[in-house]
Length: 528
Image 1 (cartoon, rainbow, N blue to C red):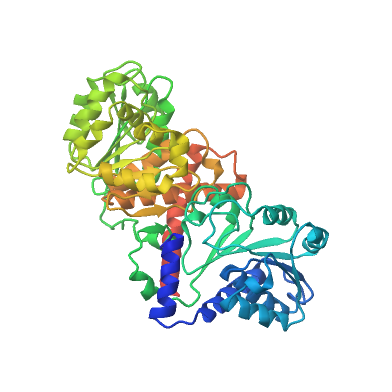
Image 2 (image 1 turned 45 degrees about the vertical axis):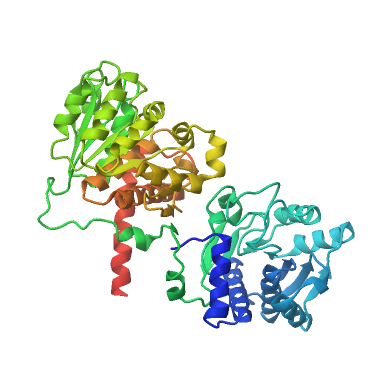
């Protein structure tokens, strides 16, 4: 699914209205119905449905406020007791918003203009009794902090017991960056229109938006294709199409040989977990190159892989290159980094790998930290074969020679710029991982949860991406597949354990289950 910034969405709406002739009032009415339908889904159903339930709608003066007034009118007709709180003089509402104000005033709903502190008691009482609160204060055009008066009332909304639904984006969250300056509405559900916005996936946006529902509001898909959008959110259907098909006559040779260069003294677990991620993602042959000091330990821990001992007692050293080169013959993919340790001698091996190994390469963890000491090494790969980098924000900051705060403030821009510069797929990990392509495209990953914030889960991801590469998947799709299924595995585990307590090896074990569920869902859809 495409994802847009505020300017792109406004252009899409302008084209829909002026070029394709879709009335703006129809778009607003469709938006309102989408919110009403979500409210019907969220509120527990009784015998009377919405009849008699209470709703509070907070309205600003723009089109977002117009959407809220249309929602309020429809909820009155659904039998709800509706209170609208308008945070602007009524004369400031213009166009479609003014028309929806007039239509609402013809209903039995209540409306109050909030001018200052004197309405605080009324608002607090209305919010305390509300089954649902609708945030229609600010839309995607907002920048900066909320105005002081509204900020105080937003704090009241965030303490309210009712279900909070934000229209298009929670008020206080910037649509392009997800930045929240002081506070913002914390929604349980955000109903966004046309296409999802960047801010729902960036910065603090994911913390405030809750469940995101996307409604096209009658803008046809064919119109969107013409807009040249280059940012996407991964969905089940997209990822299912990336999964390689297994043939009846397939065998370990056709399922791909991958080389994993990993491990150091005290970090043998990283190579084992990466190996488990590769095996659980369907690799045909896995060969691990590990320092001689831990090779037997790794061999005993992952019996399905072949383990090759390379020079270096505690760390792989520069002589490990000959072992890597030999084992890489006929390999379909190579991954370097999990638990490797930051042995400066290994930089020369990375240089040889980038210059001489023709199959796709994944660089992770300590391989990235070593590259950060000699960032010019990445240019050796240009034009020589696929390259995937999988940094967390700290590693990305070292690679870019900036602060972690700089990375977090500009995740999308930096990921895309560096993917283009390095001619590599960049997997910038985070609460919403971004997969950026050398051609300028970027993909937000919606799967995963805080349970992945535990040691070893990144190693499992590296192994999974290695496996998809070995099976012939392109670097971009291998990264998307690995990240999406890795996160989906964690989401399945969270159903049982919550957001903590499951381990990296359990994430690896869950990968084939979520892959199979995805494939089965696709088959069911075809039958339907």
